[in-house]
Length: 593
Image 1: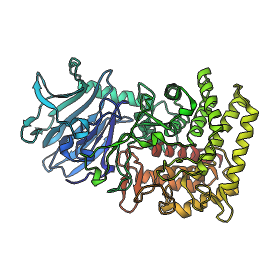
Image 2: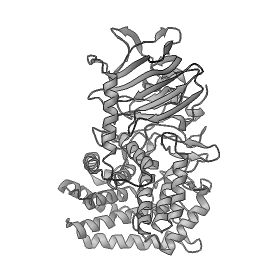
Image 3: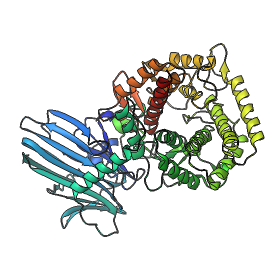
Image 4: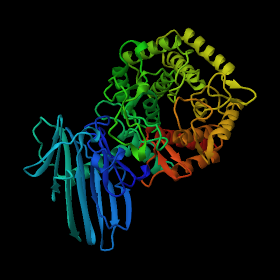
């Protein structure tokens, strides 16, 4: 089976779940009713036998795709030797359940279509009971039910356990289908009006996009990135997932395959900052409430990642029945990082909540009490070795970035007292903050290298060090920051504007293999350059990011410059938010200039 390039996938979403749709019309990934549920279409990590929904024009000679306005309603135009058609796909918002709507419409001539529907619940492991019911085909297994309704329902191939159909439409003709997930024990809901739900979806996403304050030269790219961040935000709980997929590899054929369909405090906090900088206050308030629920309890029990609803048990296990994307095994569900100590996380959270206060969002008594207790707990643990922002699976270390972010947590706590009048032991917090800074400048700085280093006792860098001026640890024009940016680029920039997180041959992360440039690091580089006043340099990096984005404006986790392909989970919140925040700094620097 030919492997679909990661960058060829579009993402469809409704704020609860997401589906990945290939350029040739195959939905190869869908996890209803929410991002971290078990997939009923898992061909992304296997083949068609693991579930997919294909609706394609097999004779297409040209395929172009475009979002309908500022939405996630996708129009795909296909041209064949005999005619032209438009395929429209979307996940409209529903009050209950989850639904995919698909439509084909022939513009001119005639077009032949192929329709294939293969359902496998449990990430491709469970073959459901599939049978006809009035007006639909129903697939049921345990708690899950899918109802396929439409103008032309495919016919069962009993031997292959596939439903399939081929048909031809002429100019002006169209056909449409809806696929609805509901709990198997509930009565089947009435069919929806596909035309209405598509219009509603376009309108809903468009209204949200128009709330953005951004009016700069990167308008299209920034708004699409903001929309991706909104798509990855669960509209019921306020939890923000790091990506819509699991186990799309950082090293194709290797073991660096992770499940990112959960809510990392760090990534969510950074997303919050990106949204706040563009005027989205309601999302900040919803996320703060999610945070209060998720981390409620003993501060010593703080996790770095939670489920969408705040659950804590995200035990990692492997799906042995799936061969993995391009043979990349193991396929993982859950994430063992849930048990890691990462001392930087509270710094990201405190920076986000500090920005919320600056934007006029009033601090609640409960929210500030939670922050105070978490800061107190951090005071006793920040010196301990940790796994760092990159969640290494090797030995814990004293990471420079982790210590700087601990400094940021104390710094924002001090500002909350001195600038916003909140209660707290400000003298002690300020003293600890200054102690952290002095220690980092002692063991985190290498005078001979002229740069900060990844961790105590080493002589190599880390792209996360680009964030030091972002959080205010040192001014961006401080010679030590200028030297650090220069050293990071010299060591980690393997193509113009594209940086590795760190050198896997110098920093033992406990894993075999290597990886590719991490796209969030490009955003951090552009941000750092803009803060240093190098507007042209920041512009070059931003142009690199916009130039490698997919035709639909999506960014994965990493990028392979030699192969010219996206790598890792897609779409990746961290990549999009780093780009958005870098544009914000670039525009501010340009205005100052």
